[in-house]
Length: 222
Image 1 (cartoon, rainbow, N blue to C red):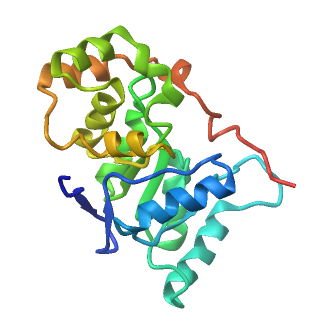
Image 2 (tube, helix red, strand yellow; image 1 turned 90 degrees about the vertical axis):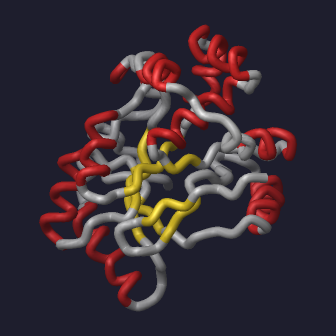
């Protein structure tokens, strides 16, 4: 199996560009999946999951300041954020002087999230894509299907390859050994410029989101 490329983060540590996701997987299955993933290595990364800008009593900039202390005292190797829009990033950086190593955001061909990805890129923030195949919604798209057939690859492999060539970090969810193996077999082919463009032009803007808008999300677990 081809080695997974590493992306160097702005704290001079590296993160694998492809890994295993365990979101909403039952605990027993998560333990099994993580055990399998440990055979391939991990980089420790602590993320703030949502900015929650409309929730009274929360302050993502203050939370970010606390996370910076985690690095200083050795409780975390690298720190980053999830679902931060450009204004959230700008404020957190301006008030602390520390740039997140990673911003984990929703990205897939139906929602390419270019404004945030561009800000991340300009500021040395690695973009990690969650919902990289739009919870499976893009796999049946005729454009994805056509490209997959022309390359003798699965639709999921094509979409994951699109992410990798764009520079995204991708941790797709899977507990099926065959699917996990398939997800990692994306380094023996490349998408040409036309295929990359065709996939990117599937973008639907806000209509393509599968999850909530970070400017509005206000859920706090009990």
